[in-house]
Amino acid sequence: MSDGLDGGCSCGAVRYRLRSEPLFVHCCHCLNCQRQTGSAFVINVLIEADRVELLAGDPQPVAVPRDDGSNQKIWRCPACQIAVFSQYTSRRIRFVRAGTLDDPAAVAPDVHIYTRSMLPWVMLPDSVPAFDVYYATKELWPAASLERLEALKASPASGDRR
Image (tube, rainbow, N blue to C red; front, side):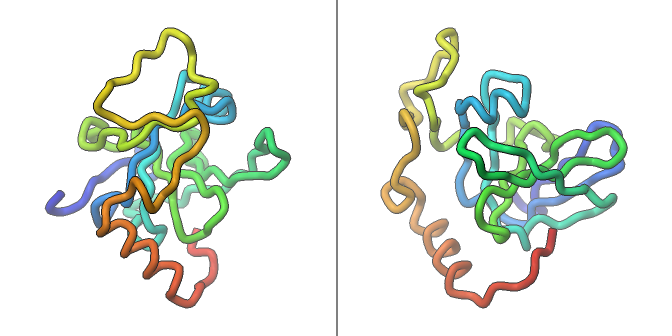
């Protein structure tokens, strides 16, 4: 990834660039993701919020209820309403929708999560770890990603950069 990965919404009003390699890539099969995407799963590229550079447009956060009663924020293009990225708990980590990348094949899942609600016709590769629910980050993430995560936790929190 020399210059970063670019992506955007369907109408082109929102454009972004991922300025570094992802921390990790999830393929989530939970019921929330199925409902929110209208698909069998979602592929999310986890990356620090300050490494998602907006090139054009101003995606708008929408609070979306989750099954556990909490909300997550999904940033959508104000024109075409495509979901570009999400925030779950930390304002400092973005879950970028891999399908919005100009080249979605540039990333592949590092893990399959919440497979307990995976649709029965989905076939998982043997080469990628899969978990009924979630996993232990420290056991699965590469050392460089864990270092970035620790640096993020250690740095002073700044305001929500959207």
